[in-house]
Image (tube, rainbow over all chains, first blue to last red; front, side, top):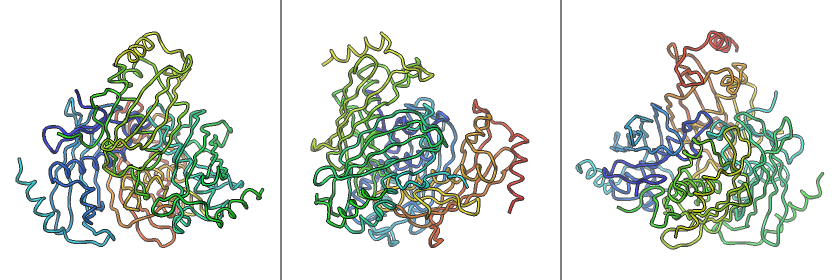
Length: 148
Length: 148
Length: 148
Length: 148
């Protein structure tokens, strides 16, 4: 069965497929710009589950939070309702206490670019105090870099 | 100065003005349907602040929550980006442990209807256990019924 | 590979799986109420593609639009970030010129109910004039009723 | 009467007040990150109406569109439901065919920063073809730079 309404993880664990929802369009006929940040979140969520091996929900349950501190987006092409998009995600530590996700969203069928950008996240505990990334997290992150 | 981008309370405390955001439109050129529930929330929020005399944030700070249990919407006319809308709100207890808000959204300039409907809310404590509405709440609610 | 971040069509063509996005939560820790209308849209979209055999995008391309005229929602249980939900959709003509979708959203793992409700849609042409459902549409709709 | 639920233009035409909607919060208890792009839109919309003297709706009606091509956001502090925020907007041409908006969102009561950033927009016609900014637009823009 073909990829359905929204994200389906494709063969590369970095790739996620999602369909543009009608609620995500605007009167210009393409997706409204802020939706890209929500798709970046979907990309991060699936990257964590499938590459890091720990869901973001589980991360928060362990008391580790990753609030967004910076985001950058380049809008490179339109995407219409029901278009199937491919979300590509990679992540690495940026400095001692920041996690950076590099994002690329393309049309699944043509490969044409839609949005690219990055998000930078702090590490905090449940009371929003900045913390250094725990060793167990760094170990998990190192392993993602070594996998193909 | 004329009403600006979003809700401004007008003379009648039940009336709130808001402008349709670009992010709230969809490719049909009108507002996307789910935005109406967000506008209903704006109406409730201002009704509480100005009619009940207690903001919903203050209500939650006192440990009283009003989760939505039922909603009904009738879509009666379009509204385009930047259109100025008037949100009319009234509230009363429905049975012993439900609060009902009746909502009406119209074009400010013409009075033409946009959406009408209602939402029904439970009363719960901070751990989401159902509670009876506290006496102080009922007293405040009674007063709103008596004011002009 | 298990169902990923968002809707995946499951065996029954009426069933769609989606995960609660972080952007869909609110400070109560469950999904914000208006998201349910967006999930209803996802259900309709996949129902059309897989049961009706014509995507909603293709329907609009043929000049047939289905604007929402009425919606009803009952909130029956919470759902947290990353919870996997099952969206069940059925549709039938309501009167001569209305299409009604009955919706049921449950937790995929437990079957516990999350939201149920319905939406009622008019048939219009591209200039938003009401039209009767075209014969080809009614024929397609009849076939969905006969399939298992 | 105090500023109500959402944007009210304050004395400086660059300043807009808006309240955080419940729908804009997430389970971390602050606003979800993508809402900042929607608030940037509110800032641009009011800047156009009150500083440029032409609403964005009127701009599109004249056949001039300003699709977003780049956005940058720095998240500098939290904001909770119902917090009153001040949105400050300035704009200038960036190169020959780009319009840049610099944005600053602060808590109205304390001045504490919430989000800052910028958006860069192309000029296009109704068929999304890039165009040079029309003379009448540049004249209007020049006037905003001269006003206090």
